[in-house]
Length: 96
Image 1 (cartoon, helix red, strand yellow):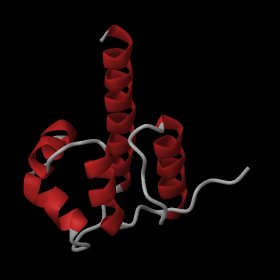
Image 2: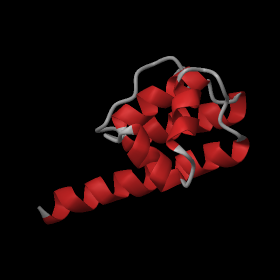
Image 3: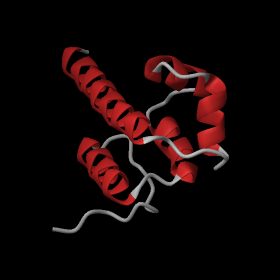
Image 4: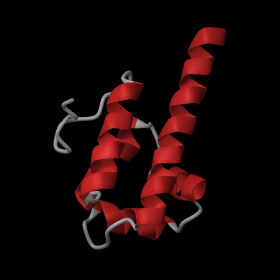
């Protein structure tokens, strides 16, 4: 079963792709430089992402600049955030 490489681009319309990416990140350790791609694929600003994860915006910025690596707790929170946002988007498409 081939998971996509952690270096492949994220796709907004592919929930399965995002989920597979997060599984790979969780198993291999999330590369801080990938956080920006994840955030942008979700359509969030740094401030919005920080608010949803209950961290400071500077923390998200540090992750994106590879100055700090997201902890395992933060990685799990990111996974939950991806699921929540993709579910919200799917619900909007169905009702709209």
